[in-house]
Length: 269
Image 1 (cartoon, rainbow, N blue to C red):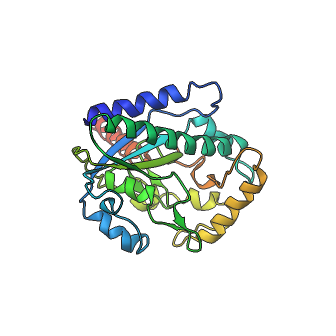
Image 2 (cartoon, rainbow, N blue to C red; image 1 turned 30 degrees about the vertical axis):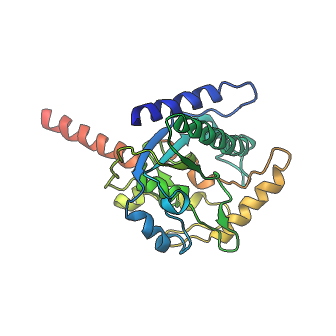
Image 3 (tube, one colour; image 1 turned 90 degrees about the horizontal axis):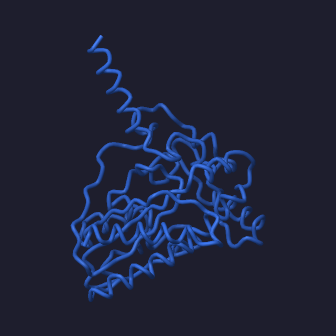
C-alpha cells in the first residue's frame, strides 16, 4: 500500500502540472507516513497550541497520517529573491499549490475509499486560530512527525529538497508502515552555527536568531494579499526561504557529503 500511495501521489502531481492553466512547476513530491498513535502528536498540544488535534480526533479509526512536500521549481525560488513584495510568480505558485493540495487530497480520498478505507482531509491553510496565528492542525509539525525533515531557523521544515514549497497532510484508516525521523539537524545554523541568512532575508524584521514575531510576519503577508488580490488570496512572503542554503536542498547533508569527499581525497594523497 505504501508504494502504491507514493506512486499515486507522484502521478497525480505530474499530470496536474501539465494542465494548460497551470504555470507553477513542481519537483517530484516527497511523501512520508506516520502512525496515528505516535506519541509526538500529543506533544503538539504543548509545542503548538493546546487545542491542536491528534489524528483520532478527526478520524476515530485512524491508523496512518500521510504527509507530503510539493517542492517549487528553482525558477520560482529565483523570482522571489529581490524586492519587499513577493514576486508574482511566487504568489501564483502559492495559490496554485494550495489548489493542488485540495485536488490531490480529494484524489487520494477516492483512491483509499476504493479499497474500503476512510480518509479525512485538512485544508492546506487557514485552519488556524486567527487571533493567535497558530494552527489546530499544523502541516509543518505533522511533516516533522512523519519524518519529512527538520525545522530551520526560519521556522520552515527543511526536507531533502529544501523548504521552498508547500506541505499537505491527510489521515486514513489504512495501516501503512511509518517512516523514521531524521536525527541530524538540516539547518546549518542549528547544526554548526554557520548560517543566519534567513534572518537577514526577512523584509519586515519579524525573524531573529532567538525569536520570531508571527504578527509582524503576518502583516507582511497581508501586504502581499492586497498587492496580488487580482491573482487570488496570496497571504505569502517566502523571502526567508529564497536564495538561502536550504531553499532547494538539505544543506547539512550536502556539507557532510563534501566533508566526506575531502576526507577520502586527503587519505588518498
